[in-house]
Length: 159
Image (cartoon, rainbow, N blue to C red; front, side, top):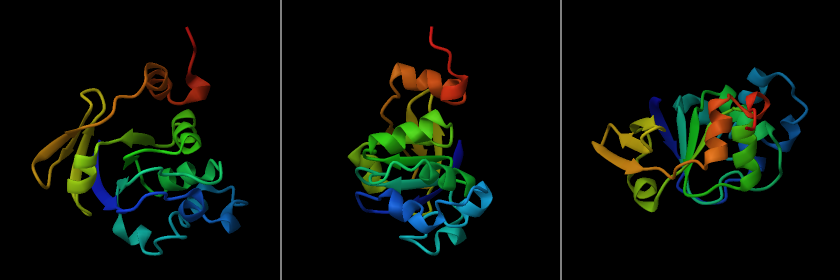
């Protein structure tokens, strides 16, 4: 997977800014996507990124699955963060909406807004094509990997 990074250099980006509460009654995913990140960044859609880069505890707050749905339908393939709120993480994985990729402090500090990156989940690498650097990502736990490979929790068949 490759694409452009939209960088938010802060911690605790909560679901209320990812998709504000007044849009939770929208059932059309494309319409929902038009409001992604509206609570924090009204210019989000003009940035045309494939990835969000953020700090610690991304997706904290309400346990709304609307947050990963809105991001995915706005074109986001993955969120790279230092850590995730567990409910956001599982909503993203279980629904096969986007990949929550945990990165280290070095990647967080050095990958710039607008950088072109490539993610190789199998190799556990995030390559910053723009800067010519690469960083390790935290590997997915075995069960999470199986859910991702199955295309979400509904496709997952426990052994």
